[in-house]
Image 1 (cartoon, rainbow, N blue to C red):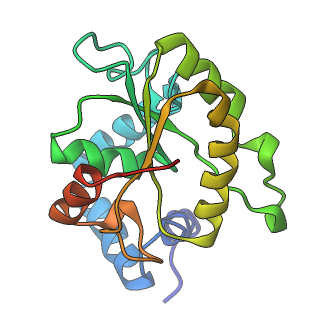
Image 2: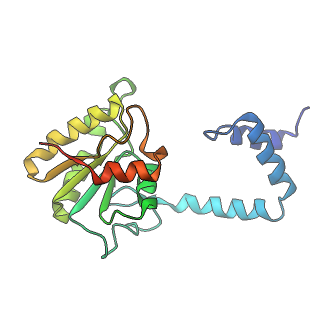
Image 3: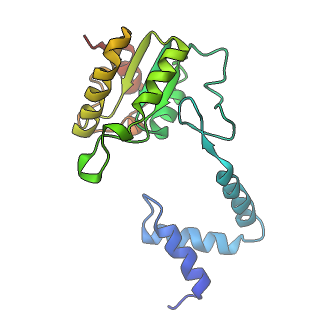
Length: 198
């Protein structure tokens, strides 16, 4: 069946979303068409607010303000910092409700083949944040992959002169798996049994 050109365009955009199959994209499209006077309008307005989202100037988390809710909180521990690859990892750790420190999101990993080198990782910004906050303990909460291991090694070498305690989460996250998809019990174990890097 040949769809209207505008409808086909929306369908193609939905298909670009990760984890969405062609069949699921069609179901979403039909739902949006059916409810275009109510839910679809609400969704459009909600999505438009994402255009005003920027990155927190301290941790790189998506935020409407210069500082995100975590970085601006006086109740969070400035002395402890978890470094994660991206926002979904931070979100997963926050859902546990047990960590009270702050974060730094890299948003990138070392990937020479795709043109991402050491200078692209924002390490200078990370060091500045650590110094300004007086961070005493850094914890790497990275996926167990060769790229993230290489990224971690590079950052550790840059952090050593700061004389801070450096940890990595324990082996509760299997090699090749992702922090984002770890269950709460496994992630809690990995954080509680973090390993100090000498």
